Length: 92
View 1 (spheres, helix red, strand yellow):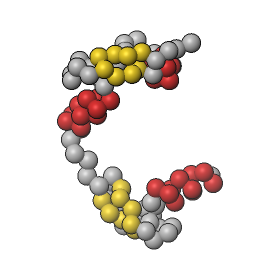
View 2 (cartoon, one colour):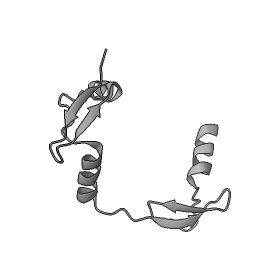
View 3 (tube, helix red, strand yellow):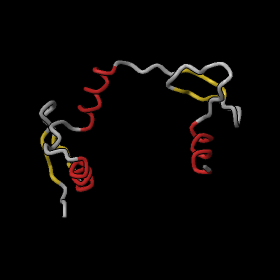
View 4 (cartoon, one colour):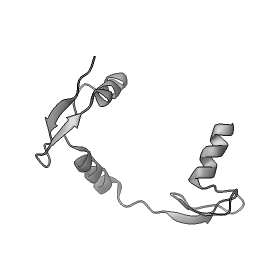
């Protein structure tokens, strides 16, 4: 139903592909406008509006490895690395 389209980024002027899968995603979400920026320009724009994200180090409560997390860990609450968290989520 959808076919890949080549669009031009309004930020950098480079061509980028608006894939059939992306078009389907936009349609499912009810988005009516096509993207105007390529992925790298969208990411750069998001980074400037959000600012730099701070990560914290913690020890995984399951495997004991170091985990980098986007929130400050609280005392008495377990923190899991991404692998252990995904495994626990799949088991539930």
